[in-house]
Length: 121
Image (tube, rainbow, N blue to C red):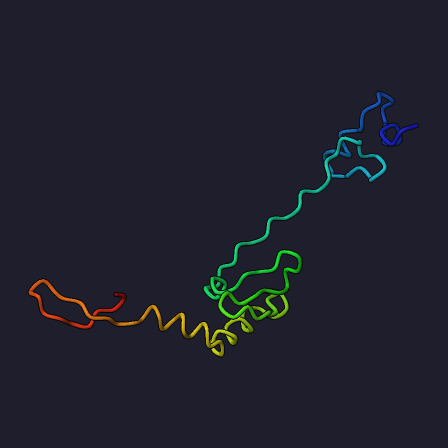
């Protein structure tokens, strides 16, 4: 006798409408072999701006490496959040050098030919 026949109240081989209407689920032994395994959840995209300075490890998602000095930082968003990464950026000398390179000023000329200090040359 299969699991479907156990729930058969009418003797017609089908589950009663009462089970369907009340939301009773079939037990694991009653499920058909064609039921698909659960779909794994997608990882949520990182929204914090600090993530653009770190590379998350693929084998251990709770660790990441600094893009500039390579130091390993704990980055599990449930446990340590992004504070460790922000604190590392405030101490990382190579990150500071990267930031300063974007703010470097050089000499340039304006439309009248006057030489002035220009950002990003």
